[in-house]
Length: 257
Ligand code: MF3
Ligand code: CO
Figure 1 (tube, rainbow, N blue to C red):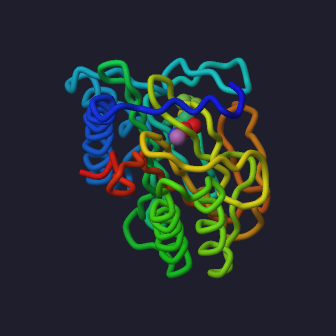
Figure 2: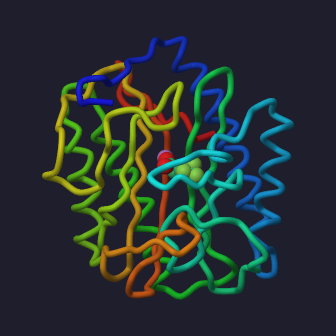
């Protein structure tokens, strides 16, 4: 889709997106409680699959195709340590000191909900803890700027400024996105300023903001599975995502319970 085609939602549509995102939030909450040393990422995916079905929703990621032509095989992404995003759940057991990014998407009543959190597994290093804190804070800094009349890159700049002033770097290769009846709608929402389209934000826009923040260099590469993105320097990466709506009363976080 081209710039200009941002699909505004009615209050009723935003209510449905709120329902979809509350399912996502509940799944994330449950998975967060399960994260501990010894559990496999496949077990987390299995639990998510059941919760999504019980909520009468459908997983948004399973079967999804992106740049590659290989459908994504699971309900969640589970990205451990140097994995940035799109880690495929499998037999890997989490270990004390790991961090794990969990991304969940569902389709409910025709709308998509999408959110992610990064969890500490047991006790983590102070640097890892700081990375999680700064990344989550940067998401909230971005959300604060998601106000009618601002420009898209006000969000990008707020995220980038918080991340870089804390000595971390912002991933370039993946961006946030508009969200609605499909998971990825215009506009793309980079977490760094100065690139691409910079439309004015309007009431009725629904956006998924998702800073991906690296401890070292922002550079990433794809693993041979064609999905898992990892840092090229092997250092840690964290990811937090919320779906939000821009309303007359400012930004509303749809994926926060
Ligand atoms: N939150 C991610 C996104 O918005 C998750 C996509 S995983 C995929 O792009 F498998 F569905 F691609
Ligand atoms: Co997303």
